[in-house]
Image (cartoon, rainbow, N blue to C red; front, side):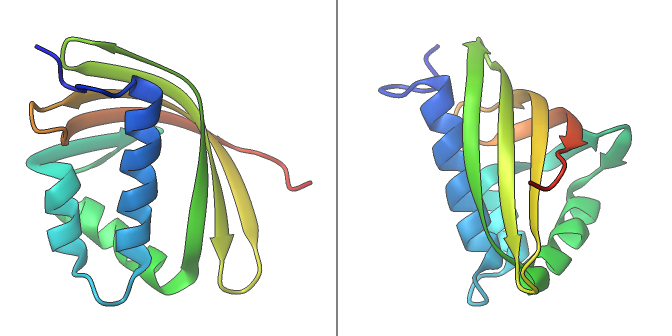
Length: 130
């Protein structure tokens, strides 16, 4: 089963996170509808030991809509094996009050056949401001 026909894991994740973030920060989109386009209804996201189900994930995203201008992602490496994807990436976020935040992310996830994420486990590290 080829979950990423015509794409690489790196390109898939770059496109996935870039378009997801763009939709989340736009005021004319509903966060729940956006989440449903990119994640399954039974999504479980574990980030640094904190577990978020769909409702908690949507609630976590609401402040991003108010505070975040946008993000740029660097995918350093990614691999796909069956429905499992793993990656090392850096997210560079820009906030409305001028703050910039860069975060290293180590992601392990499970994809569905339609390219949505069902489960992610992430370890993150905030990088010092330069």
